[in-house]
Structure formats: C-alpha cells, structure tokens
Image (tube, rainbow, N blue to C red; front, top):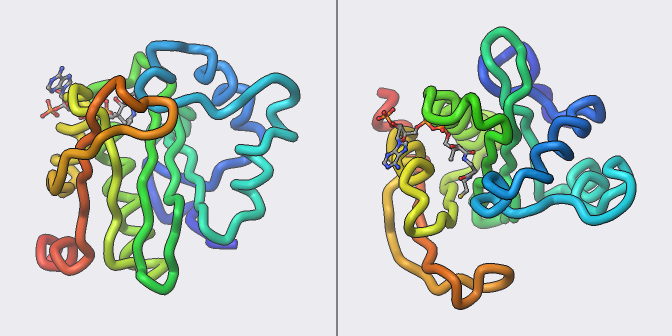
Amino acid sequence: MLDIDGHYRYIRKLADRDLTSIALWDEDEEVTILSGKKFGQGSVIDSVWWQDLMTSSVRIGFAIQTPGGVLIGDAELEHIAWRNAEAELRISIGNKHYWSRGYGSAAIREVLHVAYERIGLQRVYLRVKRDNFRAIRAYEKAGFKKVAVLCATGRLAGETELVLMESLGHQYWTLRA
Ligand SMILES: CC(C)(COP(=O)(O)OP(=O)(O)OC[C@H]1O[C@@H](n2cnc3c(N)ncnc32)[C@H](O)[C@@H]1OP(=O)(O)O)[C@@H](O)C(=O)NCCC(=O)NCCS
C-alpha cells in the first residue's frame, strides 16, 4: 500500500471513516451532474466503487482535505496502465463551500507529485465536460493542457462534449526545475 500520509497538505489516504461524507455528497445533484455518482442502493462500505478501490491494482484513491484536516472531497488515479506509465485523474470536491478556493488545484498538484515522483507515471489525462469552466481552470492551474474534444460516451452520451486534457511528466519536471 502506498504511504502518502504526512507527506502532503491537501491529500491523504482514503479511509472507511470518509465514506459517510462521500455518500452524503453522492446525493447532491449539483455535484454528481459534474462528477458522476459512486453509489447505488445499499451499504456504501460494500459498494462496488469502494470494494474495487480498496483492492484494485489500477486505482489509487485520495481524500482531499484542508491543511487543518477537514475532509472536503476525493480524487483518484484510475485506469492506471503501468506498462504505458499513464493514468486518468478523477476529482470531486463534494463540499461546495470549498469550491473556487484553490483546494482543487492544490490537491491536483499533490496527486501529480504522487503520479510522477512516487509511482513513476509519465502522463496523467482527464476528461471534463466542455462547459465545466471552473474545473477546466483548476486543471490548467495545475498544468494540464487541452488536447482534444471528444464525444461523450456512457451516461453522458449525446448530452455534451468532453475536453481531453493531459499533463506530461517531462513538462512537470521542467516546470519544477
Ligand atoms: C472541479 C473542482 C475539483 C475544482 O476545484 P476548486 O477548488 O473549485 O478549483 P480551484 O479553486 O483550484 O480553481 C478554480 C478556478 O476556476 C475559477 N472559476 C470558478 N468558476 C468559474 C467559471 N464559471 N468560469 C471560469 N472560471 C471559473 C476560479 O476563480 C478559480 O480560478 P482562479 O484561482 O484563477 O480565480 C471542484 O470545483 C469540484 O469538485 N467541482 C464539482 C465536481 C467537478 O466538477 N469535478 C470535475 C469533473 S471533471
């Protein structure tokens, strides 16, 4: 298990105790319309989302917190392709009180630190609704660049277009140098 606790200000390891808040945010349509739902009916601890996250070798979950330790959201490196050294980023600040206060981009920067400096990835990409301007701005602040516009599939098919954005490890290292 990757140990990130104590190394970062805005992210830490997700724990069972976080599920109550995450489940509450999962009921908020203003949040889930942007980031999707995690849970169906039944116990959240037994949910496919949580059980798979806890056991998967291609997903790493993070709690997002304030520097004072208040849980405000969660993020994930998912679809980790170890051989290609790339993964997809998903993020949701479920507590809307904390939107647009810099926490999202700060957490993303720390997730990228994990990706590039702790687990050896070389590319992190994401897909975001074309009109989710706050998210796009947060991603750009963390160094992501727009690379394509895609037709949405799955739950969003026909509803919207998605912007594909990416962060490249070698650019990340150059920016830090
Ligand atoms: C997307 C999300 C993670 C971003 O985190 P955040 O903490 O709100 O983002 P930040 O404060 O770091 O950056 C947001 C930026 O967008 C700006 N912004 C806010 N609303 C905006 C709008 N309508 N148009 C353009 N920019 C906007 C903010 O002013 C800020 O930029 P600034 O720092 O230059 O002023 C968070 O808002 C969230 O979880 N939203 C709901 C779920 C979601 O959209 N998830 C992403 C799905 S792909």
